[in-house]
Image 1 (cartoon, chains in turn brown, green):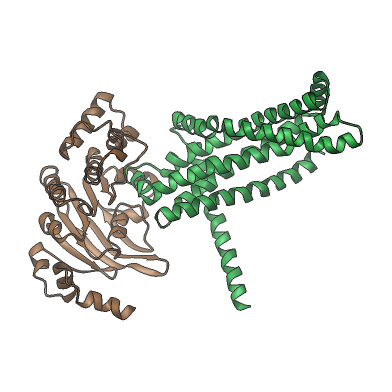
Image 2: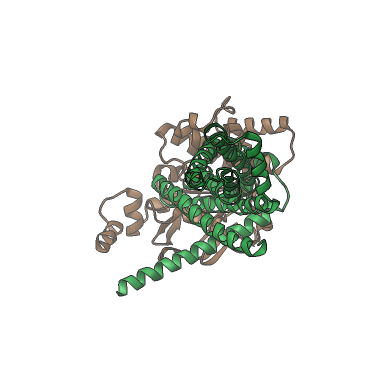
Length: 253
Length: 260
């Protein structure tokens, strides 16, 4: 269970997260939707423990991530993986070294086992025989899938996805959605997906939460969000140019 | 007028902020450098990049500095008829001052800039965040090897630059000014004391630390994509230059009073 309560984060005097509350059940897939730049990635990085909030708590399995010491954090990090928006593959290493990075750094498994684990992770994302390529030789969609393979290679309990389907073609996007669903079904991992791709959100979510002005303004089952009569949610999920979100921006100008 | 004060205040504040951040990074780096596991191969890789790959450039510059310095001192020494002292003057200036500073500036420009550009790009593409999520401390993994490598290689490079510089001056003196070869070496080694070599090399340890820490600090604080990386790289080189010269001034004054 991931419990986020009263999370506050400022960037340059601007409140990106403003007393945000959200609970995510173990083994479920929660999709967080919202406009670009509204703080979805920031929220994700707080769950991963990369960013520290000004105030508030992020409790994962009974531990408050915001207060953990380096050593305690280490144990937790091995249970959480993050898939970054642009892949964030280490470009000085081969695909294989990228995927096996967590294992190479932290475990003492034999070379043969390592290669097996890398191959296993890569085959889960439908990539074969590319372990010796460099990330610069891959297409955008392949990079995303390699990043996903790197995340699952350490067999985490929680996977955080930062816009997994942005910037890839619709077919790859669908295969990524399929993968997220499969991982959830097969490995029983808890997934948190940040996206503004509604098709993907409906496809993978057990629960959808909408982030707006630093708060979760609505959460519910995909169908509930789809048919929500909250004006902000309605405008966002239907992709309308006119509505309360854009009006607020007009006023702001 | 009010604007000037506000501006000044802002600059002082940002300077203090920078020094605080740099001090924080320094403590963490030194602490982590002494905590196992020690990744020798990563240090070696960085030492090769910083040291070995800088050899051609350092050779060229040191050789020319030797040439130039011999010719410039010859201009005056010939007037007073004491050409032979060119050897001691060049040796002392190179070993005590020019060798360390010029090598440090060359390395700051060549290696420091490369570090900021590389780690800065990693920062903007979230690779540094990715390291953290994979339970790897970015300071331990990225900064410590560069820090250790530069603190070791810069004194060695300086020693090498000193030798090349003296050799350059030797070529001018022996080939062009008619000083005998044996005489040149005797005067050179007679004028150099252990403390000259020691003080010269000692400060380069700190120059190496400055270059590594400043360039990593700037890289970790990159904001705003490729343009930000460019700005950070410029800032890293400029800041390293300023801090190297400041540290040099400090050490020169310190040694002047410790070893009179």
